[in-house]
Image (tube, rainbow, N blue to C red; front, side):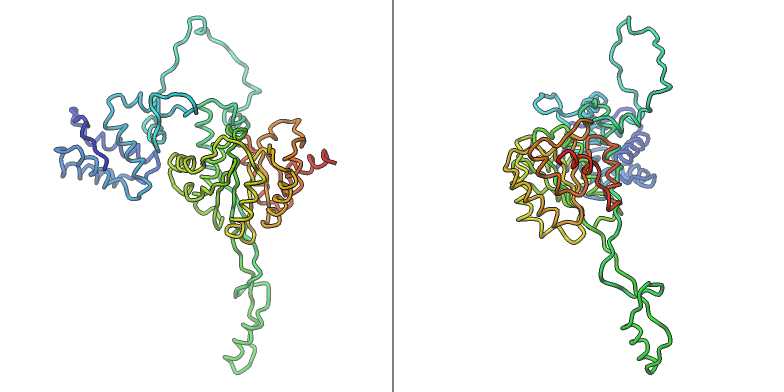
Amino acid sequence: MVTYADLPTPVDGKFAANITHFGRALRKAGLPVGPGRIVDAIKAVEAAGFTDRDDFYWTLHACFVSKSEHRTLFRQTFRLFWRDPQFLEQMMSAMLPMMRGVAEEHKPEDAERRAAEALLDGAEQPKPPKNQEEDELVEIDASLTFSGEEKLKSQDFEQMTAAEQAEALRAISKLDLPVRPIASRRTRSAALGRYPDWRGTMRQAMRHGGEVRSLAMKERRTRWPSLIALCDISGSMSGYSRMLLHFLHAASNAKGAGWADVHTFTFGTRLTNITRHLKVRDVDSALRRAGAEAEDWEGGTRIGECLHRFNRDWSRRVLGQGSVVLLITDGLDRDDPERLRAEMERLQLSCRKLIWLNPLLRWEGFAPKARGVKAMLPHVDSFRASHSIASLEDLAAALTRPDDLGDKARLMKLLE
């Protein structure tokens, strides 16, 4: 149970204004809080009083939280807003990026960054001190420069600053993967269908003594494919894995996206199924659970062995008819290339389309020289980059156009 025994009692008496501001922060953080809930919260606090600090927390909790996945975000927002006297400094530190191997005074918890961003919305962040020599006005001709948004979309994930990464993650969370329904062999009755329904026609005729009064029609049923993502989390992919997992989290939780289901696997030295973890609505909590499940994070790479385990243990479970597979890796593998080639061929034959996303395509002079790339390239349907927001947006072309090859045709010529 969460206790707030050391919660300081406010002395300004502006409960209504503070609760209103707190409710607006929750709404910006993602909770469905409207004016009605804020009014109910003010009335509830007036009725319950402020004699016990834990009662105050759970009173607001009862008014603002309606789903279990909102509890963590509410707790973090409440702690930052009501508990810490220097909550602005705490929020600033919470929004700093977490770096592996670097000691931190304050390690952000689940949903703490989202709570900090909501409470800091519109606040002016502190600026670093300037030297007197830098105070002079500098005029720059920006007539031929890109806008900030366009520059961010084309920028490499590894070259982004902490602020740019935060903006990129917000942009990635809004991306969607378009998908078209697949025409099934099965049919259903339809008045404006394209095919004659002879059985339906005879059934209607039997109701009128065998007289055929109209011709029954039917149309093909449609079904939605599944999306299966295999994401490389080895050391060579560490600069892109977090961004791409944010992208897969957005795809897993997109409403009305059209996919029948989304399955996500990570692999390095072993294969790990993190599908259930990415179903968690809060992205910070989802990635933390996925990272705890995948113990081979930033380790070695055994693509052939991991694909063998997927083909043996998971392909029949998740690769239904019409499934699309996203293989996210740089292809740098030291296993037997013949085994890798055989597993890639089997994977391609098991799905409707196999799309390879490789961050190494950001280099203009990229050539399929590595053994793993040579073994994998002939057995993919589309070969695309995955190093920026723009490259992820271009993935829509590979999903909506069945004849899309990406850069495969150009690179296959280099193999000849």
